Image 1 (cartoon, rainbow, N blue to C red):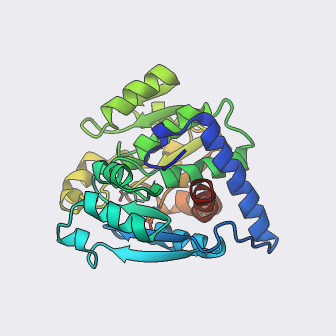
Image 2: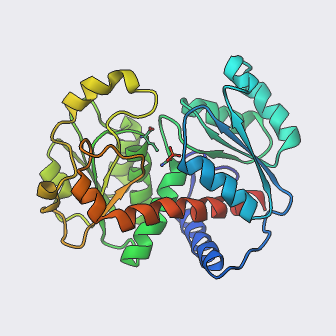
Length: 300
Ligand code: CP
Ligand code: NVA
């Protein structure tokens, strides 16, 4: 494993090995043990979109590993003025030991890895959010003990989260069902792969997707970069909400997860969110541990 560009590139063993290390790092942190696994290593953190969790967890994470993180906003970098990613990749490879990038096109992340000579981590594109899903898998395992026999239901937009969760679920042996409106399906190739390699269902019925689910996941209706489609999407996604009525069809002990930020009253009601706040904020915390594990695997 040289990069983390998308979960498809990881084997089941890669994923489990990251999760095991993440558990160990979480345990060490809880017990006040700090080891400089990445002493002196420098991570560039490029952001072309807003972020709370990804930025803070990467900055804190590399610091706790004994390294140093440079926050690089695209509005300050030459990349924001059109310097090609191929050149940026080769320049940054001369200074840094690793790069995390949050951007729009997946191709940009792939190109950064192709032209650079240091590990690249995808911190979210329009296509994928692998760091989030590693933290999600870590959280599911914490709560449920293992992935065996679990069903994950995703309610809402077939976006970057849905794409990565479908891959993560299939790779860890969970079944995955998505309920979305017509025209908002996940990536076609991912759906084909998931159908061929695991248990994958797509439906327009929330009730059908959520039935007997162990994990119910949702995300915003309009992702970053889709702000102008907000009104159209609010209309299209009416009914695709995680609420108390729909939760009746899930298993009684089902977890509710959200990558955050959440729009209460849209994809999730306030009462369901607050009833599952423990899981949701454990999930957010686990971004730190999972990403520390990824950085150690890639940079050490
Ligand atoms: N879930 C997530 O990636 O959050 P941020 O956009 O705040 O980084
Ligand atoms: N789908 C959301 C996820 C945010 C973490 C977005 O891309 O904005």
